[in-house]
Length: 149
Ligand code: ADP
Image (cartoon, rainbow, N blue to C red):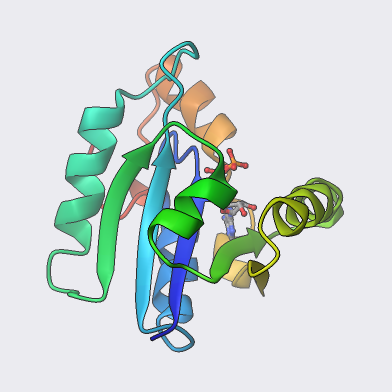
């Protein structure tokens, strides 16, 4: 069984992330959306709120699991017997960052392969940090999310 983790901060989880999961389901038998939550790091949207929304958004899909974690992604993958990390790429900035993370994860867990999906053009502009800024100043961000916040 091909199991992939989809790790990220997901602060918040957006339509861009949902698109990566839906497309990833063509490649993997199971995808575990893994919401990184470091208790020492402040999030903008409470993790309990996001996990609830994401679980609801994928409630119909038994191949998708949603968890939170606070440990090395490479260790988490071992625990869930996941041999793949799923990540999305929007631009060269993402590439620079993702390249380093993929190398280090492979170093930490030799069985771990990172699979990148290029963003769908209609979601390429969606960025969690910009959504946080818009929301902070009272803007409506629901059109960027697969749920209502
Ligand atoms: P992190 O904090 O680990 O960078 P994010 O929650 O920002 O995690 O994103 C998780 C993954 O989803 C990353 O691989 C990121 O590049 C990708 N991603 C974020 N937004 C989009 C989008 N609009 N389209 C495709 N992939 C995206």
